[in-house]
Image (cartoon, rainbow, N blue to C red; front, side):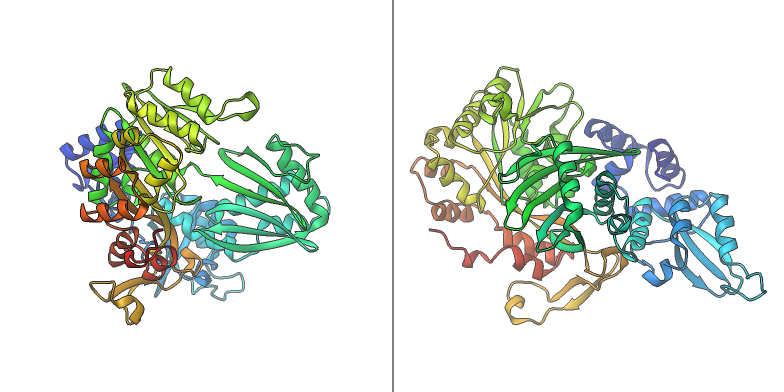
Length: 554
């Protein structure tokens, strides 16, 4: 039962969780940012998710079930058959004496109450199935009900395996189930890997690959051809790499996927990146930026011209960060144009251009045309070569705000690399505003987060307090202790001293040493702050980055 803005506003005001003034301000900002009122309120911290849940529960006259903090075990969740749980969106929450509390985001649904009463009533033989319990419906937030219902998928093998076991399984049916299984598991990538006599299917979930099952190679040719046809790729090409994209629709859901196919010794391997729609509601606050970093980024973005670069490895969330910034900058009086390969997400009010090598629409040529389209802000999907770098710098110099991504190991490396691409030093010095480096770590699952005392010698020297946090593992996070990801950042701001240094063609080491003197914090240090705040674990931070003293600059 997703809450619309009018209902949510009425509830929060009536229950005195929000003032008229704060509500009006939040509504105005939500409209400008193209967010729902709920998203805006959570973003600004005017209310928390628990407060919203409590307010809605009070308005409905039912208890509030905090599933995020008290997720029932998979055995308890399974006490309600999957068919009933999915149909009525109900989750077993607790049992006390003669009362069974059921969590749902629609506690006023009388049909679900009848089905549950029948399920937990006495059997026909007079024996008690569950002691003749009374049913109490409690309100839970939609997103937390969704998390609980995912347990049913974990209790059974993926649907695509069952479909493949059927004699008349078709390629479209198999692919559809693979897509649905991937979405249900919150996967970012789908891997189809030929190995000996079978095809192994793996999903990347929160940055970690997990094997989901395998099937016989006899089914693979039709599935592979289906992917190629939908992605507009050549079906007769088996020995060359191919890239494409496809859009899959089912009911009211649309899934956009980026496709990569390469030949291996055992056959053609497919990797499909899922371009989810969640970025539509993504904001700068959601990125994991500290207040200091957020202010620095906004200050650079509100200048009329200049260049903002985000660097990092593939899959580190660079595009997501810049889309969060585009959403902040997107206003009716601003002309924003992007050129990308591919266009990963669409924002209302923004002009998106897709690179097309077949029509010779490259990054460089597209960027030249965009400059003649009277833009205020340009988003270049990636600076790939000297030509696109030169045009980007010149666009930033001639009155445009230029946002782009760039492949570099860290923020300090980006500047020498751009100079190595023959960018004029005085041009880079005068146009560059800020360089951001980032990578992703897994978030601690909020449902099972617990404190502990850190005693490992290799870690205690880096934390101010030894009471840290980790996830115990629960149904919401598939027993991993992690759910979702957050970025670690490293910012280098272009100051007058850095401008002078760029003119002398500096090394990476010189850039970083100056940035440190001027207050820049390393990605590792940003990670330690998030560890102490209970956002991620110290193991995760050490997995993806190293202390500043261990950086090796050539």
